[in-house]
Every structure is written in C-alpha cells, then in structure tokens.
Image (tube, rainbow, N blue to C red):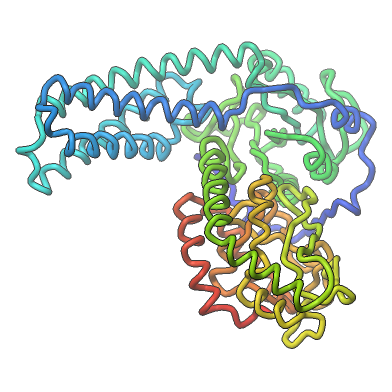
Length: 507
C-alpha cells in the first residue's frame, strides 16, 4: 500500500504550523452550522468488527469441537479443547494481520475471501507442524484435522458472504456513513464530489471543503458543497465535531501543497486519503483503496481503530477495576497521610489536554501546600521545591499521586497506557510545550495515559529543557505508531520497574 510517512514528510518540509485552541480564528457560519447539528446516528465500525470477530472465533471453535465429538473419543477432551480454543484465537490474530476485519474489507468480496482462506490455511499448517514437532500425532485424528480444515473453510466463506451482505445493506441504509471533508477546491474538487455522489453517497456524509486558495480557483460553493474555511481551520473544526475521513483533492505533482497540508493535518486522529481521480499517473491496483469508484492513496490512518478500540477499551476497564481493588489500601493510607500533614483537600484537580485536544479534568493526590498550589503548572516542580510537602515528595517520587487517575480511566477520559497528559501552561526553557516541539499536538491522536513508553524509558518528571520534552514527545509518537495490546501490556508490567530504576527526574 502506498503511504506517506507523516514524520518524514515533516522532516522534509520546514514550514511550521502550530495551532492552539485558544488562538484559533472564528470559523465560517457554514462550519458553525455543521458543528451545531448533532452527528447523524451511525453504526460503529469498531463494534461491528468486534462482534464479527467474536462470532467468527466461536464458530471455528464450536466446529472444531463438534467434529471432535463425532470422530474422537470424548475422553480426550482435555487435549482437544485447548487445541481448538488456541487455534480459533490464532485464526482471529491471522485474520487481523491480513486486515480482513475492517469495514472496507467486508465490502470486498474476492479480496476478503482470499485473505481469510489464506489465513486459515496458514493457521492449520502451523497446527499440523506443531503436532508433528511435539510428536503428538498419535493423539490427533487426521480425519478430524482434515475435516476441520475443509469445513472451517466452507463456514468462513459462508460467514463472510453473510457479513458482506449485512454491511452492504447497512451501507445502502446510510448507517455506516463516514463524516468526510475535502481539502481542495475548484474543478478537481467538483469532479471528486460528483463521483462521490454517483458511487459512494451511501458511504460518505460530505460535510464541506477546506482550501487555502481564494477567488475563481476556489469558489465558496462547489457542486452544492460549501467551502468551510482554510486548511488551518480544519484542525479547529475537527476538534469541535467528529470527522472520520479527510479526502485530499490535489494532483500528485503538487508535492509542496500536499506536504504543507499533511504537516498541518497529521495531528488529527482521522484517516487521510489522497484522491487519484484526476491523476494521469497510474499505479498497480494494489496501490489503491477505493471510496465507491474513486481510487485513493492512503496517506495516514487514525492510530487505533476498528477492533483495536474495543481491545483497548476492555484492557483499560479491566486494569482500572483490578488496580482500584488491589491498591485501595495504599490510596486510603495516602489520603490519611495528606490530611494529617497539611490542611486542605486530599485531591487536586487540573485541566489538561485529552484525546484530540479535548479539555479533561484529571485527579491527583494533593502533593503541595494548599497556599502554594499551582493549578496551571506554570512553574515546574524542581528538586527540593518548598511547595511540595513531605508526603507529597514521597508520593510524587513513587507516582502514588497519580493513582486517582484510575477514576479518569473508568470515566473514559484516560487510558491506562498512552502519552502522559501535560498541564496546559507547562513550559520547557520558558517555552510552552507546543511552541517548543514541532508536531506536539500529534500526541493527542490517542487518549492520554497514566503511564507510557516515555515514562518507562526514563523520560518522566521534570522537563526543564527543550531536549527533554522533545525526547518525551518522540517516545510518545513512537508509541502511537507502533501501538499494540502487547506493547500496552509490556509498558504496564515495566512501569513498577521504571519507578525504581529510572526515577531520578521525578520530584
């Protein structure tokens, strides 16, 4: 798949764009009208994908066990049951690796079936090799193995045909529409809009256009669609209302304009596609994905989408509930110690940027004297800071002061693992973080977390220099680009270790 790496594109393109909520210019009346209207109710692609995977894994496991009951002595359940369950789980992983559990994949008949059958064959070959390697062939019926493979392939084909039919029906009913904006204007955008209306009207809810050009080259209305503002306005717009997809209507030859646009928009948690409808340059079919009949090149994807959102949601809730139960004694003792040492509330609340720059209010144990609190965190805490109490010094060093944020996780404002949310006025070398680091707001493409990749690699605590905040942001961006549930689990397990071995910057 043809992709542009946003980080490399920005390294090649020196022009700087920093946009903050407070500095944004008012949007046009047309944009404000769209924001005022509530988004049309649609089915969630993540939920559909999640349910589809659970049902598919259940069908494969039930089929394998049912064939076992028909061909094999039920007394061997102790062996077959775990084999069936593990194989069904591996099949689910394989189907995700070949990207067959996405709404776009469900619509693609032959591509979907080919990937699913290839994944199923690979899993069954792995099972066969494993059985041979561990010399368990005497325990496994070859008839059972072959029957499960063939019948499993047939069930997968039938199930995927049914799934495709459901997705097609929901699409026709307009229940899977993606809220979409177009970057670009003029004749190119007009032709793109006409093609969308002709072939993807049930899939796309077209909100409007954003273009930096004016006059005849970019009129205020194109094919009945309003121009909502400039590209920089799109960032503010997408933070106030849901945008799922950005379609770029620019020629491939306009490299500077494309990179300039991407430099601004890669901080948003949206899918970005470059339309190839006007390009005379043609790649192989595998290079394109399609929106209706419009060929597009994938420039950027939202970091965590589809079934991964469900995985992360479940991971967050389970870890938060278990942690609150196990750490309740520590939290109670901490609250008592804070009350005994100094007057004032036990908890300290502070506004920070959350997902897509949304303002959230996080909870912490109070670690400073009440009369010296710094709600905006305009001044960093330093070693021996007189504002910090004795109890506060200990709980900050051990990160116990962060434990109340488990309630933020339960509320859905934070994740257990993710880029740490920074105070709004936090500075490094007398510069606000977003002024000091290019692409700083790209950290907010995912929910912030209680711990993260930067923290377990030693970049926690004081960020008094630009280099320190750059290191933290770079680690956060690495996490976003390489996210997996296993990486989250690794970071969670390594957090206690890092608190002991890498806490020299925590005051």
